Length: 255
Picture (cartoon, one colour):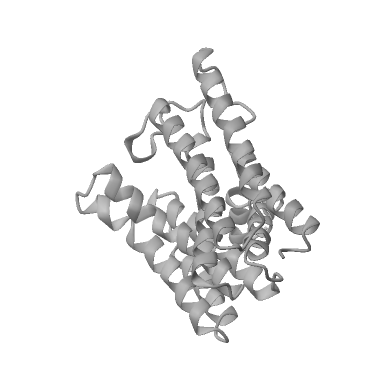
């Protein structure tokens, strides 16, 4: 097995990370009332692989510059036909590379770092919406909805690792952040319904999901904070994805 294949298998498994990326891409496109495209889906997966490579390279796990260059070239080749999509994808790659420079230069404020580090994934979700040809308000709402679900995953995972303190937040701070992000997902879905992009049943269902997850967070916190639970990690992302796709199928994508 080559070093590249071994890296992908260990750090970006196709059956988990790759599948989640594909499902999320389809969800973003469906939210925008369009049909998924092969090049768009491939680019979306490659962009998340690029984010993983940047994280691992920044952590000093390996010299991954060659991998970063290869993935960036593939993104370029897949999007030469669409300059707008190429600009968003290129912006995501540039933002991902720029963010680690801040702590190296002494910037440690958690709010500044959060904004710097999360621009890249937000642009990745924006890429999916842009390739769907959605109006700006719809594209922004779809991107924020899926971005907030993705961020919920980042803050609620690794509950059994006390050393995991993203942006300096301990366990309590991370759970509060996850609850806030669940609320952001609800607000984004409401915004999509207000502009007529989705039926109102979607924000109702997303709100029910968020309430269930946040209620579980509160119950787990009060019971003594022991171990990981079903509501942590990718489950919120998958629940939002599946609800969007289910509602989209029932409504014939969108009216």
